[in-house]
Image 1 (cartoon, protein in one colour):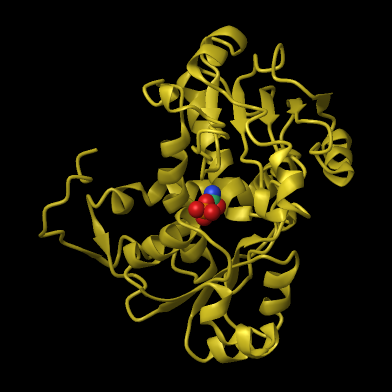
Image 2 (spheres, rainbow, N blue to C red):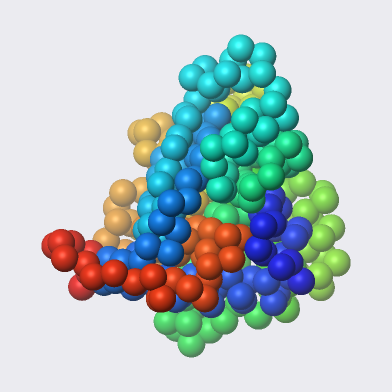
Length: 338
Ligand code: CP
């Protein structure tokens, strides 16, 4: 089992079911701090280098928020052009430099394997915030925590569930990482719902099959969304060889309230890693679903903060000291009672 303290979190391949459950236990203990009902200074003096060389809203801000909520400080760089990588500096040299400043690193980069390459020159824990079309392990963990919590509402659990993964399964790294994590569970039924050309890579399908799960590969949503979890993904336009190629798929797989009523189960939970592409010609997860109680997309976001707090606490070895460093919360926050 991963010891966590001082370790990098680069891939879901590092995690077995015990590790996942340990992360979830620590994450759930973080809830009062994330809701600002309590404050902790357990990482007072520690610095996170939040290095995002590819666009991000949720992952970047929630890594920073998670570190701040534990009492630590955050220094960021956003975009390739605003870093010395644009001047030809290697990932290795950048890592050696950042090691002199920071106690932990969160990083996103457009190239598969780049975060692992960076970590080889870094002597503080590095957490992968997404490397190209490869992996997004913290997203997979927050998705899995969300699935567990949503299914519990209806008396279900992850073992034995039916999940429909919908959209761009080829380039969508979140569904790659999530499928691999689900290999640690039992009897999961997968419907892989993707247009021709954007199906799940064979390596992931093999892993899912080897785990003993059922897989149905289909190229249309009609008749294939009656699952416990319907997980929609964005067409990852930035990873296509050309915009013309990406345009062929735009708007092909849209879920609206009317599609939900016709094709999903009465309590199918709708998930999406976000951002959802809300441009009119894409509109992959319609705004008319916003009032649907089973739309879990913003609960996923909240769970992301918990997961990232848990990973910082575990990799920096303070998961059992969070309460010891608690301080009063003198200021008003509307989040405290929610
Ligand atoms: N889900 C996710 O990775 O979102 P961002 O690209 O905004 O970080």
